[in-house]
Image (cartoon, rainbow, N blue to C red; front, side, top):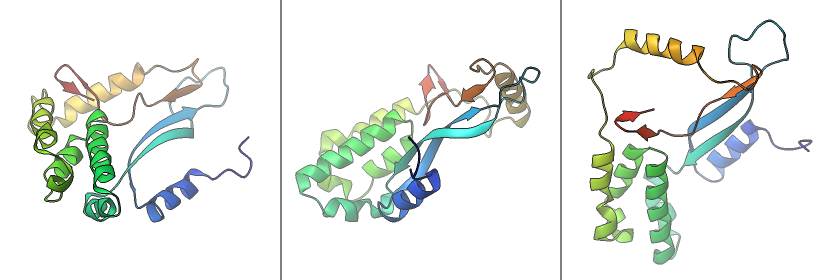
Length: 168
């Protein structure tokens, strides 16, 4: 099935050079060789992943200008909403606050920045984080990370997610 199929590096180069997109995130999955004794370390060989590419904001205006205004409006609206769903609120907010977004988004659609401001709040007890607490929690996370019979594991999702007050 995979004979003569492009590798990630081929797809990445094509996506960046021909489509003008940038890699934003990867959800990785690893497999380990079958073994009897060793369940750790958790990572094995990277065997597949889901990649998320987004258009750089600097090129967005030129790209939208190549389309009919109605189509361009739908594209930018979909891009803002998609990036909100993936938790890239900074990117969505930056798009809404560009000078050219007024051409494509009406006033009500640009008010999504109020939603972004509200949803971006979270629980951050330390202004710059805590290296020691991060190491402890990271250690606990990796020791309780679910695997598939000890032979495979993967990242839980692509992008950022919010549960209650916490972002992960």
